Image (cartoon, rainbow, N blue to C red; front, side, top):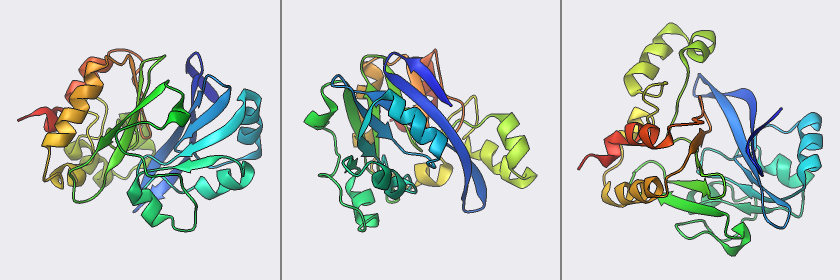
Length: 234
């Protein structure tokens, strides 16, 4: 159930969800902070088995929504761990008015991250912003929808033929790993986001984990430069 990326960081794959008729895989990331508390990024569907496995790692203290799409299971995790803090950008907070969040995430990580997680706020799109993260100890960059990297085997199993054609045209497949085309086209101001991805690349991550698709264990620099080539172009 839990895949250990490196010491104190794990990923967990969950069931597919329906996103406007497209089956999307789900994935969450768990980081154990220096004080032993758990930082949980993009929580997936909670089951008794998963809850038991998470409790074996430590105490859930932080639940993170990286963008306004990744919020579906926050209420279930908050109910299971009532003392956990909820975090997200202002767009998520506005969407989930039924939940109480900490101050909106932007560029500067809160002190609660205990110095082991940096964050990178991507803005400039008419459609959506996203906060990406870097677990500094393991060199793991974490994206929600800014990079989607579906394998052909996944697409052939779950997506219809016309949907697979769209995936390839959009470049949300292995070998490209782009953000969806409609999101890229909505980016009317790219200068800030370009500086943000360059800042992240400059930190020389070793791994890249995204919510949807095949994560990158090695060759992170080359992957990021390819996946964000649309943004890096002047």
